[in-house]
Length: 267
Image (cartoon, rainbow, N blue to C red; front, side, top):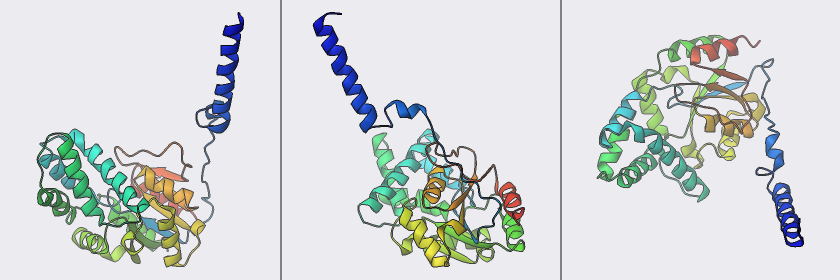
């Protein structure tokens, strides 16, 4: 190895070592994955919080409506949803607030424009808000909620949707009487998964964060709850995945019936 080659080798090695030290996610430590498993199934949570859309309510009709205005491009639905979530977080980080449905319609216009589809603001709003008001509950939801109430659990809905929006949804889906309270981030102005949203919900219900358990079908929502020191139960609806870099919730089942059975078994 000549002098120039040796100097080049030493320089590159030093730079790689520095990168590994200052950016561990890109360094050698990344090979040692440490995942915390949240496992506290020996103690009952004091309050069960439920996400609403997809967790409790079946969004099939809304997805069909959105797909239709996107030129029947069902492949664009995941992009639309992630864009909606992205801009809800942009809004929160920017200390702004807009109704989740309004952000959804704006995101729909963005996706449409990027794919050469003409979509007015009114068309976007109607495609989302029209079917969203009357979507049904998943088949197992009512029985699972009934069983959890009989077992003595306090049930609270906790959603990024507006107060009037979720009230309308619950009326049309026949879910109003199952919940002790309905919470919307509209009252704090910060969307989940911001930690402040979970802290606010716990304070509102008069319990500590570790006495709360969130039931949700979204990996980002479960991740946010666990990072806020809540407990979690993940509903692995079709297409739903947990975030690999977040702690693992103590319960993960394909539907609410199975989750209810595990929660009821906690004495």
